[in-house]
Length: 406
Image (tube, rainbow, N blue to C red; front, side):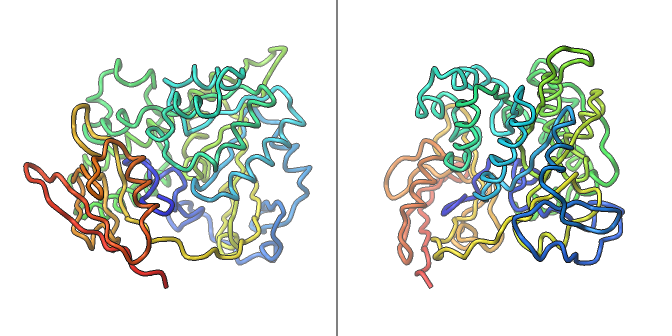
């Protein structure tokens, strides 16, 4: 989490774009191209001509994208410039296709009525975030996404909730998709089998997940459950997008745009693969590259086109992160549960463990993740933060020392 903990709930860390590289050795069988001269100039669109990465005119990229049924726009959730770039792309697409629909990974299906009320102007900003349960369902800083939401409201562009509740993803990851009754699947159908390269990519993510929880790889079934959960996630978003694609021959055919983590988009393996299974074949994918180093790692087939963002000067050092992934506890359970502890983090050094529940911080009861975030943000460098932690049947006092600012 920015200035605190990882800002995501449970398993969602791995495919949302939070720290997932755009390209990697297991992502594609394509030979990695040599570093391109195109990466020397920021603020421009790039695309592959065979194995060569070239600068391309913005007008051509956006016109080609707007000619599709669906456009997927990626992000790393905690990078502010990714969201500013997304707004720029949305404005350009809207100019070409005013009949636009925007789907957001950030919202589960059940809050769709809230999105409808926001776009129609019935909700204040405060009411919108409260009724959408932002701190619970997404938990990244809302100001990162606010320009996108305001753009939809000002232009009366329908917003679509693409996601499902994390309790469904968690249930599938624990028990497997077959063990979750149809009535508890939020209406999500069975996902299409993944491409081999995507399966291997997810296997790497699963191993990273286990390492973050200090667990050794277990039975094959645990990976299969993890795979089921991620495919359900992709399928849910694809279904929500596909429902907004008008049948061929319809007098009004909106351009459907999906805003989501880059991991769901790369190489057409995630959401685009599920869209094709649903009969939606004209799909474009646009990804940002934040650094020249990241640009040089791009591979053919990763996306339709890329935008190289200028690098920002480094800000003053932030207070260190606690280094945990949090999730809300079960109903009636005190505190906030730690789903994962990052290796080498303050949390690990302080003795916190996965499955611990933080019930008090600095003597104050903890009832939700927002309180943990706020307490960590407030903590000055070089000070101590006392925690009361429930671990199994015991309660422990743990002190977290935040290092002095360099």
